[in-house]
Structures are given as C-alpha cells and as structure tokens.
Image (cartoon, rainbow, N blue to C red; front, side, top):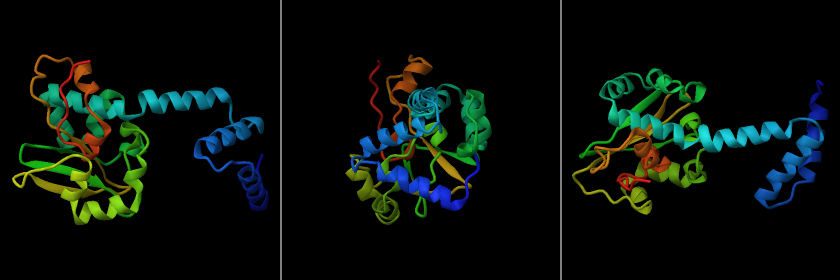
Length: 212
C-alpha cells in the first residue's frame, strides 16, 4: 500500500515510540512490530541473519584471501581487477564493484579507512564494525596510522611502510595479508579459517597459523 509522507512519518514515530533504549531490545522490538504489521515475514529475517553471519560475512573475504595464497593465477587477476576476479567465488554486487586488492609485503602494510562516510565492501566483509565508522578512527588513521595500529596490537617496525587508503562509494579496498609461515601443506579451507576481518581492513597484520 502506498503511503504519503505524513502517513510514513506517523508510522515512523509510532514504531519508535514503542522501542526501548537498549539496542538489542530495540532491534527485537522493531522486528516484532514489523512482523506484526505484516511488513516482513519471520522466515525472511531468519534467512537474512543466517546469510550475513554465515555467508555474506567475513567468510567470503577470507575465501578470497585463501584463494590468492594458493592460486598464483587468481592472485594475478585479483591484483589486476579484483571485482572481476572474485566472481570466480560467486561474489558480486554493488558493494564489491570497483574493488581493489591491496597486498601486504614484508616491507609494506596497508590500512583502509573512509574519512567521509562508512564505505565498506560488506558483501565480502559482512557488516562494518562500529569502530570503522567512528570519527576517531577515520580521522586518526590518516594523521597517525602507526599509533592507531599499535592500539589494535599491531606494532610495526620503522622498516615497514604504512599506506592508508581512503575508500569511497566508487572504490573500495580489500587488504590481502601475508600468508603465515608453516602453512604450506594447508588446504584452502584451513587457510580461510585463520583470516580475520581486521586483517582484511588492515588493523591486524600477523595472522596466527593454528590449524583448526
């Protein structure tokens, strides 16, 4: 049913008047109200939650990193055109259009930030963490990236250069961390399991080679 702006505003006020202050309760209450009004089916909500937590989340990005570690040809195509290369893994969509892969090396570390908004390749990294959208992270990562990295537990020696990349709606980034030593015999699934979301943003550098 089409509603005019006054009806929409009234519905918005009515829904929010029923929401508690606690964020988790607000989400649950909003979900209940939407289901009650027939705006969404419970099954649809469950499907989206499962998709974001199990498929659309960082697992997709981790699979891209693992494939780049084991497949030199894929790595080359990822470096040339990341948006096109990741289609091999069934990943596509607006959130990964114009995607650029950034490869860490022994002398180079990449850090991703969005200074004007919260641009984020959610289709391969899931929902962005709250700190990524915070004004403090966005501003300080550009001014003092080494200090910000140290606060995440990533202390870099002076011989490792740090490059900060400012993502936009037109160009987003995925950091490809270095493959940990001692994983030469690991399967692609084992490798993907140790890749973290923070490593793909760049706030983490050294991944732990612990087989699951």
